[in-house]
Length: 524
Image 1 (cartoon, rainbow, N blue to C red):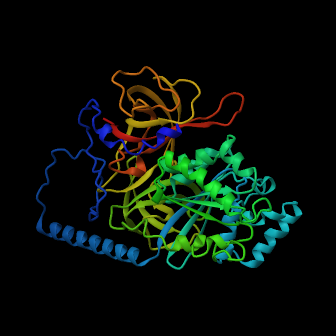
Image 2: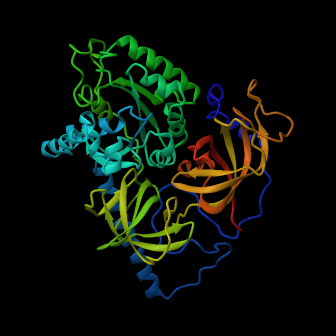
Image 3: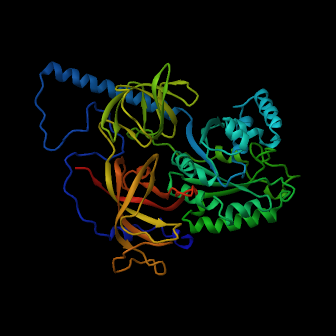
């Protein structure tokens, strides 16, 4: 697949030439516009075609006008607060197992004051008792005993830290191939990915060349919501490396070529050397006595703080993708999710899709359970809703403003690239699909177009099957209705990956390919 992923992001003209059979007009009319719009109470999950508005008595009309003005005033206040607060950026650490992701994350939390020295000393003592002296920084994110005993991240760890100008949500994704679905979940919530590479002799080669997770993680980040890839070459202080510029250049040259073939653009990638354990080049620039060839360049946190705004559109209609749910003994049902557009405050009305149920925002909490008055684009939050707590909410559901709900569907046409498939794939093929935070079963029902990998032109004849490295346009059907949208309308709801989740011999699953949605066949 590698030589052809480069073309994956630049096929709009070819895609526009594809003729897809038109479906019948849907019974429900959905507004896909994400531009700013004043909030209007009501239920958008109704038939809006050819409706008439009866005249209202003057007194009722005046009350409605006053209420509309109050809502608009409240919305403007929330927008004003959102613009004044620090931008929140979600950053996921990805890469091969044992590259040092959790250690870097833990050291960042210590250097930014999120972990005090006493807590760190407790982690160090616990690690020493387990004969894992070098792992203690990772204990800040690997919080359960199994992760600490094995030194292997399983779940996506979450924490936050702040720099002078920005606030970051840190997502620590697992590196082992058995936990790629969890890594996909972490990448789906991220704005920036940090690809951690071990410079230690033999470890880079294992992660990159010998069936490691470096390549797959980079591809998953590319098809997710990630806007920037920071590649940190870690363990530069290892005796086999000793801050060698030659070793650093060899690693970055090989990675740069691969990433560009995987459709990453040069201005979307930034490389830097660090030591996650010693902390060199994390907060303060590395000493010239240690690394003279990096002088004049920023440290990791310095670079993050200098980035231009990523999540700045607070005036768009608010939308939250649900990533998890749980019940708190005191607060009841709590939903966790990421705000992908706009901003909102307490008591705002939302519709939960795809089940089309209305809720009021009763309370907004930070990841640290701090009560918030408002939430804005980029933030990972917890929500307590006022409504039917018996509703079965699952990851991938989306909270939308009631006057601007997202589309839903089961059938879609997608632009799909196969990255890892030793056999052929034909209509009827079933697998597991990941779309943002939603996970479902999917069936390939038809192959519409296949690209000639040599000429990068569409083949004139229909193809009966797909194989390794093929790029195609195909129709897929999900088992359940999901919140999905064409890439041109809501990119967050359009990107997907398809995985074969193992077999009877308990082998770990693999990512078969990646894609984006071109057209949704709406539910009747």
